[in-house]
Length: 307
Image 1 (tube, rainbow, N blue to C red):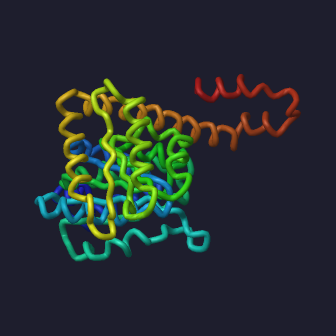
Image 2: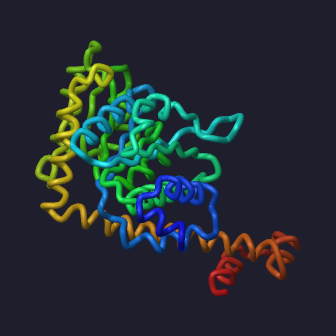
Image 3: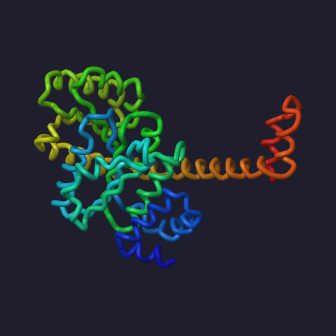
């Protein structure tokens, strides 16, 4: 109760401790989330994804700077690959965003993929909810790539920014990964490199073919993040998308779908835990340790779910 109140009051240490509880699968985190849920849902959540090396963290740094100049408070969740040695997150994002470290209006957290496996999306979602409940009105969610787990993480965002570069194969990779569907804004970063205009033109063509006539046709913004070029246009595109989400009712619809997906994920997780316990003890355990040719896995599953 005390931790929840401190978090709602904006205490940064309480926020850090609460996110650690999420990462550690602390059994008390459900009660904590229950206590703060009423204050969540106000923050604008922006996700950034794209192939490694595209400059996502530099772009994120520029977005944070512009949000802060506009008076917003910011939380950042950087979903990193796990270190093969320590199991912890590789803190490259914190290094790149170091200039915001002393700004009390910015909270940055690197979240490792370790220990979450298929639950990485739910861990990120809960961390975003905690940042939201702590009173920050902007949340930036960054992932390291465009694999299935990253796409699931991006479903937490209200606005998803997909970053590509003129590097060969990036636009093809975007098509193959199936992220045309989740992109609300496209960025061609490192636009001072050769081939940037071609990539931007190709993306605009694909966007028009697939999204023309929908509530929002994702813009393609060209940037040179290292020099700050195009970042004002990017932040403007993010804000315009949010306004459009609210005006059309799409924001409410998306959040409703996410809530349904969250309930489904929780049911699956709890059912799996119940199955593991049942199969590790008592008569269930003896059944799977006997003559395996006589075991009916469907019947066992029904017994566990009925119990």
